[in-house]
Amino acid sequence: MPPAPAWPAPSHLLLALALAGGVALAARRVGSLSTSGAAAAAAVGFLLFGLGGGPGAGALLLFFVTSSLLSRWRRGDKERLQFEKGGERDAGQVLANGGVAAACALLLPFVPDAAWPRAALLGALAAANADTWATEIGSLAGRAPRRITTLRPAPPGESGAVSLPGTLAALAGAALVALVAAGWGLGSAGVVAVTVGGFAGALVDSLLGATVQAQYRCPRCGRLTERRVHCDGQVTERAAGVSAIGNDAVNAMATLAGAAIAGGLRTLW
Image (cartoon, rainbow, N blue to C red; front, side):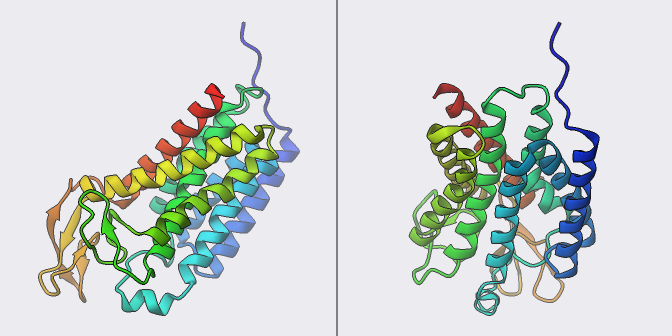
């Protein structure tokens, strides 16, 4: 008969709920989250704070705080580049970036002694952080980025566009979250596994963004965009990709890849 799940004490879960709700409310008030985004963030935070403890909470806060600060960094320059990401995150964006990590947290009480669920949780958040850092920093690179599939020049911020500064930022973003592994009993092997998983997840995001993610062209300005509406209400026309696969779906698949690679590597090592 399998052992009973090792659920945290009710007092710990109540504290986690209060902390997650407080952080989500604060983020809503400063404009980092929409109302739906705050509700989703509270749910994700509750699972990571409550079941992941200090390491889970620390990894989530590293991702959320740094990504929020970077989205505001040089916002004027990004607006002049017609940069399309940033601003308030809604529920879809929150779950796309944090849903896989929250699912990994749900596994922890059932396999409390296993290393791979912890590595997978961190790998998912490392991938989300790596992708965000790459996008926010790479969009402001001095030279035009290149499409990952063809290496042809692409507009800053376009799905599937990569640059050297953005790639280095992705590696740094993954490594920052991976440092949590050292304090979660995963050792140096865990740090490396999470870094590799997070960085690989960001590359998966770029590859999917360049191949299957739906992209639309604005008839007025001719620019490729992820949006269905552009240029003061102009309806866009699909130019590439699968209409059912948007940016949120790509982000979710990238974090899933980060979790699978990090968890798998930590199992092997």
